[in-house]
Length: 336
Image 1: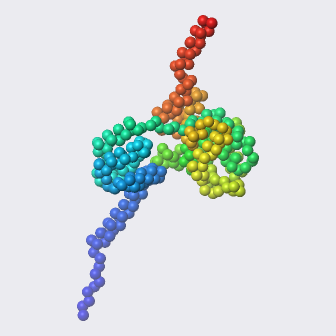
Image 2 (image 1 turned 135 degrees about the vertical axis):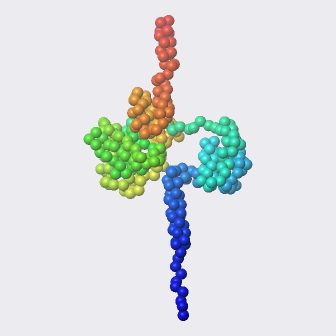
Image 3 (image 1 turned 45 degrees about the horizontal axis):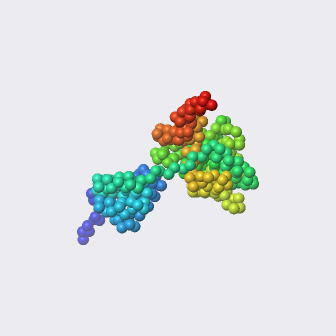
């Protein structure tokens, strides 16, 4: 009896299996790289925008008329900048799905332009903290009972201001990011908001007078906290136990507003963590610090942004009316 030999898999079928596996791996790699191209915060904002669009009744993929109706329905209830974000999210969804993008339609664009002109409002800016505000907050903290939170908060306030850090950068600082030099401290972060390619950023904090030096304050905080690795700024519970996780970004805003109340500032609603960053730039501008030094300390990519802060800081000192008032004062004194 002749038995047929077992059927061998053909080279063709093996090639098909290998090809499918390669395509699957390539697809996963592509997905990961596309995800890495956008920050997690941006992806969250886009997902939220899509959810709101679908909750209203929109469906994806969408069309021009549906998007226009959505804009008309939300024009008065949502800020125009929020609507712009929603349009970007809808546009991105269609782009990456490879289908026609209704947001690019002239009618959608014209409708949005009309909404901006009708309902647009000036962008709300955080209050820029001055040196005297920082001094008052630090002085208030120094008069509190000696507790770990006191040391942490002093280090946090001084580092936020003199380092011009964003709150996302502050809570991301690890002990391993600190490099101590004879002249001060260098903080190197692998990534920041405007550094999505992860080339890293460095902020230098030179040693200064001990009562206002961020590098010294960080040393004091580490000494009382008793840890030498992990996040630099951490939560502290009611029993004075320092937690291992990083401080929540929202806690920085809460701390700032609580200190504002304690110091009896009259601009508490205008305070946010960005007040430190704006404060460093505008305070430096008032002291006539060189443009390049301001730009470097804040890590700003755009010259226009730095000039905006400089103009804000100098708008009362570099003012045509100052010269004219001085001239008029001379005239009045002569007449008298």
